[in-house]
Image 1: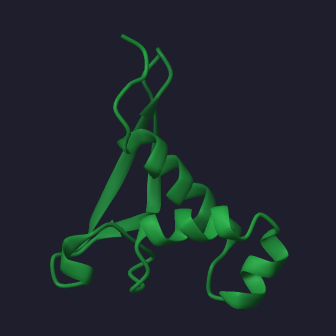
Image 2 (image 1 turned 60 degrees about the vertical axis):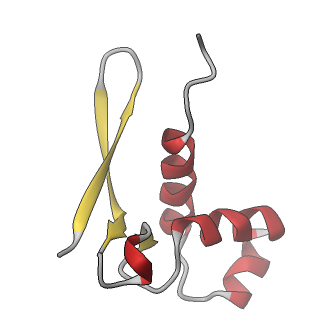
Length: 85
C-alpha cells in the first residue's frame, strides 16, 4: 500500500503534494522513499549535501531527477520541528 504525503506551508495553509515521496510498509521498512525506489528520502538529502554540483550527482545517480531532490529536501524541512516558538 503506497501512501502520498503532503507538505503544509505558509500561514494561508497552502498544500503541496509530494507525489515522489512514498511510504510502503513492504519497502525499506516503511521509511519514506523516492518514487518507490529503494532510495530513502534521507539518503537523497545526504546525496544533495555530498554532491553540491547537481551534474555530478546525476552522473553518479542517473535515476534521480531534480524534482526528486527538491521534494526530498521539502519533506526533510517539513519533518523538522518548528524553530519558531
